Structures are given as C-alpha cells and as structure tokens.
Image (cartoon, rainbow, N blue to C red; front, side, top):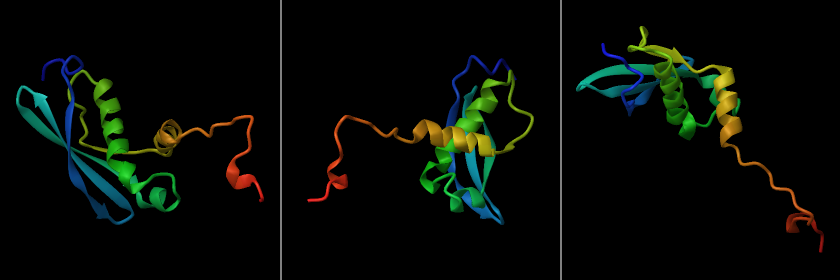
Length: 113
C-alpha cells in the first residue's frame, strides 16, 4: 500500500462486544483509495469496574490508540487487534479530567450557616 502517513485517517466506530473479561471495540478504516479495513481494540472489563475508564469514553480511548498505531506506520499495521494499556488509560484520564480551580475564596459548600 502507498505511504500511509500522508493520508487522512478516517475511522468509523462500528460498536462493541463483550467477550469474557474484555470489551472489544470495532472500527472501520476508510480513505485509502476507497479501501477499508476493520480493526479491533480491547479494554479489560476490570478497567471499567475499577473506574480507570468510563464506558462512554471507551470509543474515544480506542480511537486514540488506533491513531497512534497508524501514525507510527508507513503502511497499514500488520495486526488488526490491539489492546489498550493501563498507561494509556491513565494518560486519557489525566488529559480529560478537569483540573480543580483554586482561588482565594472558600466555596459556599464549605461554609456552615
């Protein structure tokens, strides 16, 4: 296949399946001369029950994982199945958790009237 890095990556989320201890998220890659390929990304169910990932964030987490994989390749990756690591979950949570604002005032909820 032609050089992959210069072409836009268009992923379509297809859905997920629970497979034992994993949730498998399916994506279709489109845009390479009209061709399409399917890719799958897994996240351990334990990551959700331990609050290291939220169900509604899982497709975005998996999409980021695939974009990283595609960015590091000249051609399509040799594998079609990937797993999200604990480090990737922590990175996503850090990047998407609002930072607490601190100010010189006390919040109203801390005051006893």
